[in-house]
Length: 136
Image (cartoon, rainbow, N blue to C red; front, side, top):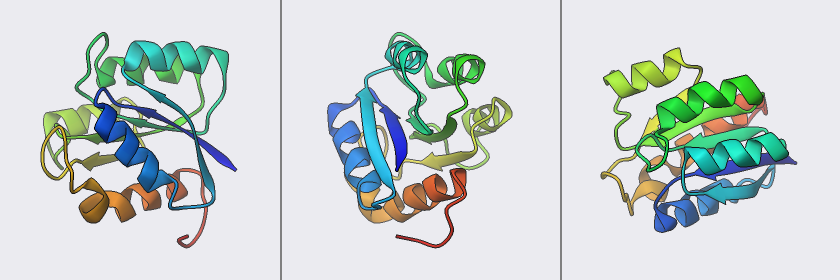
C-alpha cells in the first residue's frame, strides 16, 4: 500500500483530493494537513510515499515547503494548485525544486470540478511517482 499525504488549506479540497486518491486501491491517504508547516512536522515524525501539495497556503507556501521536504523526506511531491498552470512561473519553480508533476486545478482555488476534470490525471501521476504500471 502506497501512503499519501494531502497538503491543502481548503477543507473541501482536502476531502475531494482524498476521494480522488481513494479511487485507486493501491493508495492510502495517511494524512491531510492544512499547510506546509504541518506537513513538515508530520514528515519529520512519519514516512509517506507521496505528497500532494498546494502552492498557496498560510504559514508556509508550497514552494518553500517543497524545498524543505526534500531535505527531510524521500516522498515524491506532486503539486496540485490553481497557481500551477502549465508554463507558469509557479509550475516551473515547483519542477525546479523537485516536484515530479504539476497539475493545475481547473477552476481556481476551490475547484468543485477537480475530480471530473483532473481526477484521472492525479491518480495517474501518483501511480507514475511510485512506478505502478497501468491504471486502477
